Image 1 (cartoon, rainbow, N blue to C red):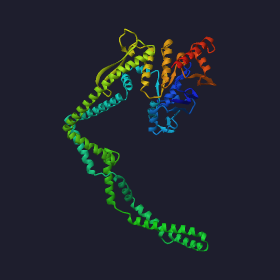
Image 2 (image 1 turned 90 degrees about the vertical axis):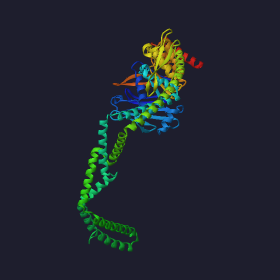
Image 3 (image 1 turned 60 degrees about the horizontal axis):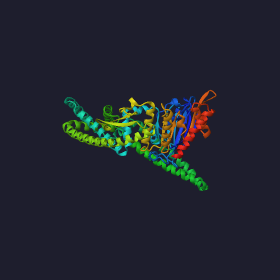
Length: 560
């Protein structure tokens, strides 16, 4: 679960630490107080795209850091450890810096990671349900994904196999389309490929020869300079009065010195060793000078060979290995073109077998989906009944469609909120409050198969109030007994059910606006609930109502 969140210089936050607890955590505050900034910071730590505009004005960077307790989060722990991120004593630290200029930096367990890696890990840590997800629930394209996720591992594994077959079919269709080109085009390609192969093969390229040729060319082109410098260097060392003579004379003096004072012996030995090394190097320099080749004919051959290689590089690749790789590809393409009829027959047979396999898998996938649909509908209706929608009918309509990456089924969620009404698509029948409850019902049902330890609801209470608010509060509290839940809410009925209650507010310090977050005590909760109920914090009536809400929470928890 998310145990601690630290935010610094992020939007209107200068510095803030939130310590979350298990169960239901709520964030409340006036409209515009900055609750969404807290959710934005959490999204940032989960790898969601974040721009430099989130850096607090005047700051060099924004920082968000989160600590996750993974003792009860097996999937998240496995994902972290498989990626090489240390989980010490069940605790994982995730850190992200957003500089005012430059690229974002992400760290997991102290190690740098990419945003994509952070996003993959984030999916196993927290599931964020924002206000925009109401609209995603109305998108029919999402319905099959939700059904399959609930149906479980067998359905998801089969769906993956169908997807693999579909991709294989697409690749085969592309190959068949290439073979279906007209004969003139095919003949032109055959001529071109044959010419290219002949040109490359005639060069008889060797993978490492260009580097060796360049080295030989440089040596032959500068033979006179090499001979001159080698000869002069040798003369300075070996001639009378040269370095070796002077060093030998110095050795004689050191020998006399060592004969008198043994302390000079190490100096003598060091100089003797240097003398022998220089003498050996001098002999090698002479051999190098004598071996220098003056060969204009060989230089011309090398230059012509390099010219051939350069010409091939302009056409077929930036290096000899790339040219040879291109040659292998051209040879394969030529072979395919020259045996087009045989290849086409083989590909058609392979395609038929792949399509047959895909359709068989899709049929089995459809059967499993239909079985899962009936159970899914019953569970959703049971959840809706618990959310004061007991007369609501919920159904999943499965309709056939052409074979695609997810099979041959199209799913759409249908709902009839009132008795006697026909089932209709969610987008045509559900009000804002009903849609919030349907989403919560889906999240509750999916939570039983989803191993993500933390759920975040950003204003799921849009469009509801009264008795329904109490019901949603109870459902969120119930969900909090299975997972950690973080909820942004404007409703006191929901806030009163929280295990941990935070208040978010804006303050003006000097000439700057800052967002503050406070974990409320029991007395502070009464004041906040009084405000949310529409009264003043010191209103006796509002405070009494707030106490009643908290007392109801205690009674329900005792009963649970």
